Length: 499
Ligand code: FRU
Image (cartoon, rainbow, N blue to C red):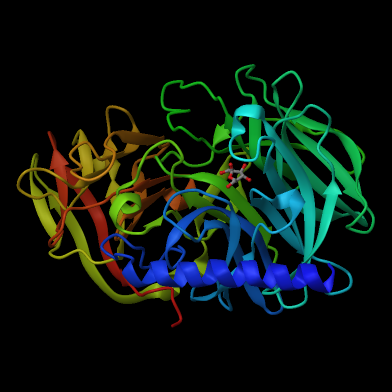
């Protein structure tokens, strides 16, 4: 970058930061997350550049600092020493060069052999300069940093294949003395594919092969691919655009999932499973992972939506949050588990063991009078229960509202039902539950969301819930049959922000 470019770059970042600071002054907090990462104000989407660098966990995210709508993308930035408490940093990347004129799109980051952080992102341009009508021009770009905060852009490292409209979201990893990059693409035949590139020095990249093609002909693009080993298998995460609705799957405007297979450098990817949802909720998209120094595979997803207006967008000056960090594990059946990382329990400030609770048919018990951001654990003894539904009715008030998080015995699924919601979208989602006699439920309740984990991460349901004003109670209830819950525990949760 020339001195002139560097000055211009710094000015764009400062302008964006000042605008965001001003927006933050009027940002409303009624649904603003207490223990999820979000921008101080403005819009966010995908997690980007997840890494452990310079002694800290670095998390970047797609960010429009000027308003609560999606717009020309920047990379927002937070970091943490413990993956639990976070510190905000100034905006890390802004669109300020010809190749990223209309947005610094999603990407990833790795530490190079020279000790610098290498951030790969998609430089986005609209061919007509203002919208997608005449197509996109998307290239893969590199920016490097000594401290994780200030970046020097190095320009395009992979050009867009001729005639292609969607080519984005580079994810890089190191394997067998080479660097590998997956990129999502819509092929000339409009098929969603993941392409693999290889490099020996992080700056010169060669096309290796088409790694994966979505089997459904309607899937025209695979966004945000990620590829990593778990045990002796490889997991490919991707976000198909155009996935058909089928039963309980494909219900969202945007859906994320995974395929497990075999891969080795120099070879193709052999899928061993079908594409599976990674989470069953309304709001879970664009997940990205990284390997922690202790070898754990940790994931953040994005909670938000491109296809509907969310209540925080219209009045509150912010939109979108990341999920809590989750650890991934693969079981012997090649099923991917995702559960909050162990450190998450450090946020617990106060714990109340409500003990065992048995309920007669249609009976309820208030377990929390005034619900603040908290985590509720239930050990439901299904073998000794006959209820049709057993679970938590959170924040039900006169006139409706509230959300239901319950095991539904007819469906044999765990349901998050927002059918009574007075703010935001309604509807329900349901995760499969292979509970043999017992179901362990872990429910994270933030000011504007719920995240539900079944049986230590066998499945999860992640949804926004925007409660009406006033105190929310939580009632444990059994419907049409009795319930035995062997343990009920409520943990209050502290804030993730250091300052
Ligand atoms: C996924 C996505 C990515 C893109 C980014 C733009 O949510 O569409 O494919 O890089 O968001 O903000």
